[in-house]
Length: 170
Image (tube, rainbow, N blue to C red; front, top):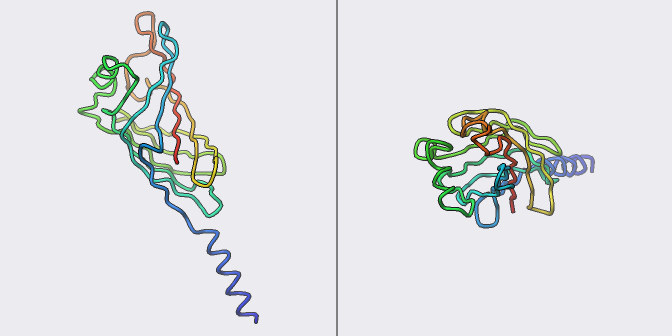
């Protein structure tokens, strides 16, 4: 009887450590961003092509997040602006075809990892909320200048430096 109880306890403990991998891709998931422009106000955009994996523990707590975004898939609902963002002034998509994120640590409310944009890697913290069984919203902010994307905001450059990031995984 003692062996059966020990075996049952081991199974229960083991099952709580089982991880689930959730594939991240369009169209259910979304990678979006927002920034301010002095004249235009808030500019919203998204990336249409991306992939990754969200790993969770049995309780749904995030344990890892990894993903890539194709920079050429940027969409701000303005084709001229999108073309400009793809060129060497900003993302330089032909030379830097992907944005990458690799988590290095995770806790009950956030994931910290290395974000690579435009060939520059910096640590970034994303907070997250679990909405249901397999739906998560990650939020964070970066300074685009830290990653070499565009010129700093000035009297002649009206694009804000801070970019808010929202990743919805379903």
